[in-house]
View 1 (cartoon, rainbow, N blue to C red):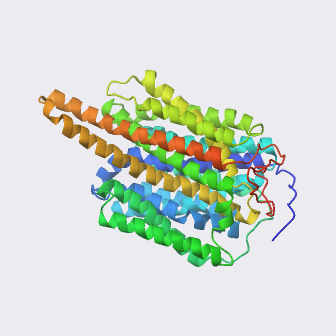
View 2: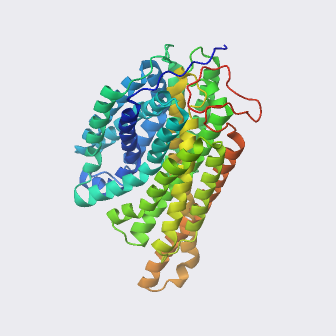
View 3: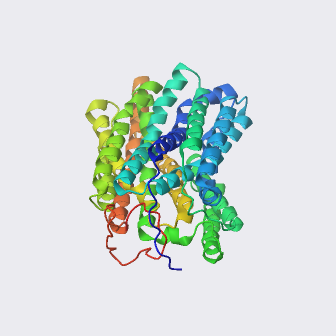
Length: 509
């Protein structure tokens, strides 16, 4: 159905204040993906969580978040982005309070699942609110630069904050710290956010789509999580992968036939958005694996404290902020997004390549610091246009679900990255130990061998991460073909476009 493009409404005078509160909420959600990791050993001991169940503290959050994101995105389109955002924040605060006050394993796992559920409501609403509030190209570039820096660097901030809270206060504060974040963001959003009235989706909710997508994504995330602990050939792992393929295929078929789909296939098939979702998901696979290996390397091999480990990630955070808010923002209105995303992912790959040279006695200042700066600059530069392009050319009524796809690619990418790269590292470590065991005859030699085998595992997995980032860069160069976000019409390389859609003016096509 052809419709004439909507004219951009007058800019919301409160948009920058609104962005501050949206940024606080986004930081809280991203922090939560890593902040609990550092606190997990202490929480496990206090609550008597078994060794077999400790992974569920992480997995319960990832499953609920990753599985319900598309549902959350559609709810924000149906119910209103502001209302969904505030509800998500209040629920997240309550779930965090429950987690901090947990007295046993069941209460902790329940709290983590609830955090994931409410995170799945507020994350897509946050991104789609920015998409509909910022209509002028240069302002939009700045807004997405800030959002991109938080989305990329928040995980590393979580490591710093998690280290501080665990070392100087108590693991419970890694949950309680969310409460002030959520209250400030919810109160600010309630009074400041002015959601544009047009673009609300009034169609009925696609229940079969909700069920199939949720079960399919949960099976996929759980399959990768289980592969990490039980192996790729484990019967349950393989069953989960088969189930996810069947369920997600059924979901695609359903979406192509129902009148009001949960995820309209037009959101996925437009080449720029498809390129963004794919390249972003791959980049997250590489980054999540790196966070894990570098944390273990610094703490176990180098003997850093949790706080010192957190601060060791600062160069990456600084790089991401500079890449997003300075390089990406300044160039986004001058060059095509693929000329930021492609080179950005390549620069990150070069930084990752440096880390393949890690050894037991590697100098932090000589190798790890410059590698992190390159990683941060590259990812920050690439993330910013990617976040902006995610809602490129969508109809206003699809903004929430298009935003949810970004979060879904990040969550699924994170689960895949952690499981895939960890499994590769574990295999390489075991092989190295087996090959060199005979030479370690003294306790000192055995200790050194253990450290060397760990580092061998990390560097082997990091080589894979380098390859994944190169593929992400290639996808960005090939699939993303929109022009610079300067308000002018850019020719599409293959004639594909979305000219017949009502657009949110996020990135000019």
